[in-house]
Image 1 (cartoon, rainbow, N blue to C red):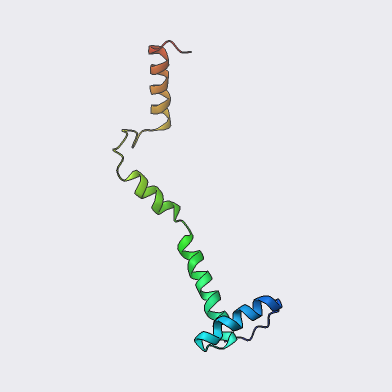
Image 2 (image 1 turned 90 degrees about the horizontal axis):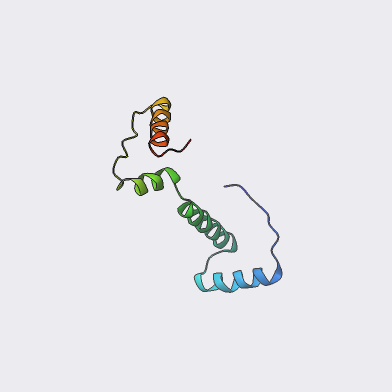
Length: 87
């Protein structure tokens, strides 16, 4: 462990001391647990965007675009525009 010194406002320190008196923890142990809980909460709240994207798209059927080149798509767009007379 590494020693760390912090300054606490008086009202916060009183609240901490009131809470820790019930558990019998030292102030240092109380603050270590509080910091650990905050870190765990932050890690759980982070969204894994890759996982989210996979979950979101897993139920979507293939679009037929897989393996198509940029030129294939451009040619398809041209055909649609010609067909619909959009130039």
